[in-house]
Image 1: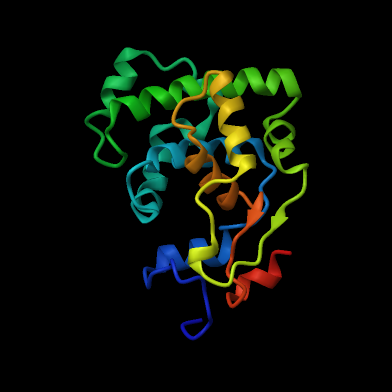
Image 2 (image 1 turned 180 degrees about the vertical axis):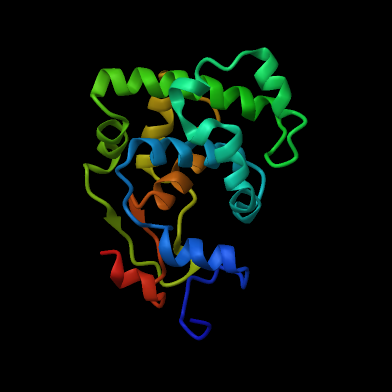
Length: 189
């Protein structure tokens, strides 16, 4: 698959190629996976996505496979243990945010029946198909990501600025931002 045309943001790293080819932009409706992406996008703030991809399995192990019920009750000792875990991003604010976000996520699930119903409302329940000609045409945030960010923050979520929310929306297929010359663009209509 070396000669296949992909979005220009990809690199030759096999992990990155696999992510682009199989995950990025694919609609996700599984609550646990949506929560995982929300936490990982927050952890990515200020870093490259490949850094997070390389640590994703370590995150799954450290954070009980993103089981929000378990994460929501992590205590100070557990949080401190993360600061010596080289397999994840050792940023205390981001780690504390993951615990706070688990609590807020559980509240949203209780209110809406599931997180999927809540989060997909920001795009009217359907993926938005964009047709960017180049990377320059892909926004870093939109009015939908602004609305998502505002509402998530109101509900107590952390590390959910509009840019992080838009990256999350791209990752979980709420928007399809594959460039028109990318082989995935038409496959994810």
